[in-house]
Image (cartoon, rainbow, N blue to C red; front, side, top):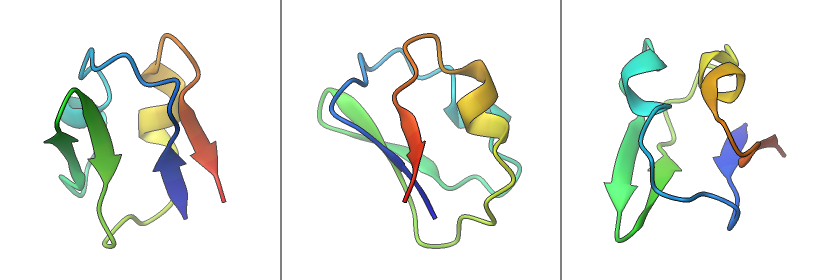
Length: 54
């Protein structure tokens, strides 16, 4: 599963690229929900490299 690390700056660019609509704001950062299908679309748009594979 993918997760969003503490490097997240809260820009939100990843959320609209998630085809499963699994990325939601959580305070000043974003998080990936349990329904992630591991497509990697979010990671390809993150400008700070905050999206990691666990």
